[in-house]
Length: 196
Image (cartoon, rainbow, N blue to C red; front, side, top):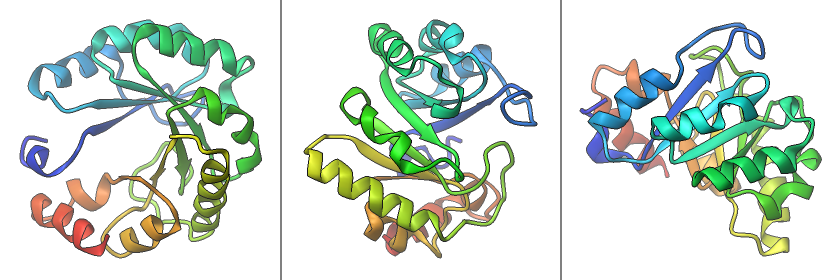
């Protein structure tokens, strides 16, 4: 992690509960440990059921932003309000099969829209090219509404597609496997920046 810290703007932490997604990752204790070793923003992506129950814990652990899945929310406005009240930025995430239209009513309430370009829960999946159109559509709605919402994309992101996803309208590229499994992580990050 420290070898890429000088070259990235933040760390995206995938929190998985084994229910919403098949895998289990880690909880607030690990986020707190990461917080102790970096001053960069920590973006906690809650791939979990009932995310509202855990907002306070992840914020206390050091999350700067908390991203929740629309697919898990019965009352989005309540969860967004809880995240904002905690002092964290509000992120809304969409799985690949979820229509972008489900997020549009919430653009005034969020700071970031995360578009999954793979099915969440497993690293190393291939980028789904149809995600580019989803990013374009989200960016067009965001721009027409004049909302300062950042659009991020997560899944299969690397040097080979960085230029295309940015051209489609993505502001933030979330990369895991293409960086952390690379022989030289710094070079992997720089290759994505060159692609951008």
